[in-house]
Image 1 (spheres, each protein chain N blue to C red):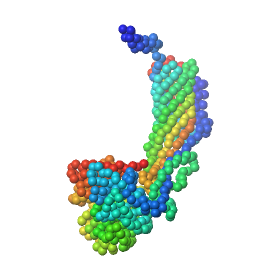
Image 2: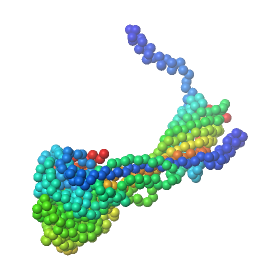
Image 3: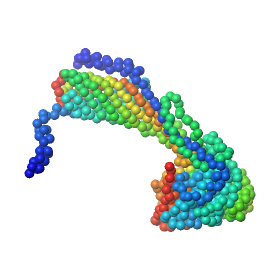
Image 4: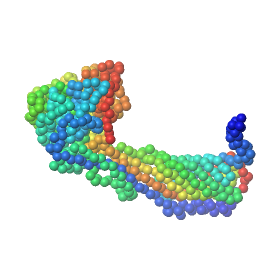
Length: 424
Length: 198
């Protein structure tokens, strides 16, 4: 086929065009960096202490540990304080008051006395009337490791009571590299370090400690763990706690769980068992080492249940439930391993084992035979942190709220109520 | 009675108009193209298909393709063409639409522990130029065309660091690429209504 001259010319032009004009067209790249940072709001120490009272109820923003005492739930709102929730009708819990305790992450209750941390200090509160509490005592600098990470330095004259979020957008060329503006931004490793974070739970009259608690009460003593130490307080006079000992117990300590004159202490590298036959002088009775992960622990007469999880602060890649035999406390043996998705808090009531498996929801096992756990029920659709199963009601702290389930009939677990978390 | 008459006129007037019109000189076309996109980034191939209706000198249709220029993407576009000259040999065209990213994950190749968003997002797509039509047979044409094209694609990476006040906000980096390039294409065109060969 003979080609028309116009076709030849067009073909030639088309062949030459990209070569000639491709240099004229450019790739442009614009980088838009959107981030938020938090600016601290300070109050003086006197102002903060004067404001620790039963203030009007507030929305739950960032739930942490919780304690049940009688008909009341004391729910920690991380770094802000404690919600007082009337739970006399679990189907309709009522948020009654809020105790402003800046820097609060942990709490424990004995009788009518509540112990809570206020950043580095321990505060003792009489909760005989939960709607009209009174502060009884402050002990300064009990938790010296409580810090802000990321290079943020607070001022010495004030206490941070709130954070104001600032949203920022920076636009620039992609060529100028990463637009990392650190102007006033605060990063914290507090959640990762063991100084706390959204973890939870424990209960009453002396309280059944939750698996992620850092405060535990046993008989006449309050035990608290920091990242590296176990502190002992004599609370025989509940409103007048007296520090009696400070024991170094290693690094990356996360949780404490009291059971039968023993303290089960979870750390990132293992589980420690401390004997408190002499309540003021805890002595290490045993240890179980594992890969580096986060590991809340609970125990019963024969076994310890340890959940190992990976994740940002926890490192590692292991997500499983470890069951340890405790017949020889000096040498707990790993009995059985169950794989999980990302297990957090756990609780046990009789033969029922409750495990918060993050986005896999709440898993309830029949643990009568630890060699062969039977999954009885899995409640999906909630992202769970921690659970207390007590007296037929499971209180579950999840990302979007505090749930209460009635499990008196395992065939018919019912959602009783949900307190919604305001994330704004 | 008068009202009924009025309704009858309203309902049947358009049909009457249609009946008076000449038969539509429409035909269907399908255009399959392969080409090269060249610009600041290395030249890459592209494939396109569009189909639509010819009406006199106009063509209107819809198309989709595969575009390998810098970021793999799938443009979906409307295609308008206008032919010039006695034999409709020369044509100009304008394509406009949306450019869907082909890859679901952005190019973060290392496992950052705080990475929470890692994806591409699509954007505007356009292509305009002119070409020459060579009649091969009654219903088959061979097209040569060239033009300028622009495609937008965004790379989103987000990091959520541990923070003091949960929920921890996400640091979001959006790299928005506006890629200009010269396209040259060869195409095969099929017309449903055959026209005499050149």
